[in-house]
Amino acid sequence: MVDGIARKSSYKLKSDEKVEIEYELEKPQEIQSENIPIDVLYSDEHIAIIDKHSGMIVHPGAGIRDHTLINALLYRFPDLKEVGPEERPGIVHRLDKDTSGLMVVARNLKAYELLQQQFRKREVEKTYLGLIWGRMPEKKGKISWPIGRHVKHGERISVKTKKPREAETCYSVQKEYEKFSLLEIKPLTGRTHQIRVHMAASGHPLAGDTLYGRRKSKPGFPRLFLHASCLSFIHPETKEKVEFSSPLPQDLKSFLDKLEEKKEKRGQATF
Image (cartoon, rainbow, N blue to C red; front, top):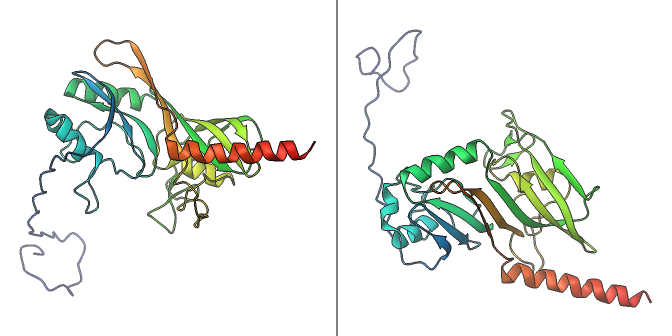
């Protein structure tokens, strides 16, 4: 309706005309709990610490309703559905589908709000282990390039954006191999795909990153080599600092072991 009169779609609007549209919103389907195995490293009445598997999506969205971490959490903690938004109850931060490692989940509204505050104030310490192509120019450093939606490819995040947002990533080199380097990575901000975008923009994309790095992987190559290994924050109830850690999953560890073997063989061959 335009100023109360039904108009055809070809009607050209004039200044100050009031447009009214009638439509019905489809009621979203309730998220169902699913008995999916997940690794719960710790839980109490206020929080749960999850060691997320690679390949698992954190919450429903974009036509995906099942087999997410939320479906599994609702089976394990039924009361979680009352905590926060319906689509992502208890979720105060997330990991990419292919990233493995630690996540904290809020189990009541008080914990949800207090954990959200800590993330907003950048008081939560997150540490990742990532394997990159090549070698960084310095053993330690900070990448401070703002990032946002790509100017042409909106599904991707990039340093080439019309709406840049502050993003800071600290790194330190742990080991170097012939073609790769193992980094300890600490994001100071929590932008979408931040670590992956910063590494790729530096010329050293994460191994196994087919979106921001090398599109094709050799047979036997692992998935995205990024693992959330440490998580530290203030417990919302006890007010004490708590810290959790997770070792590298076996698939990533096995790949590193192969790199170590090659490194040792090359070292022996030089004598």
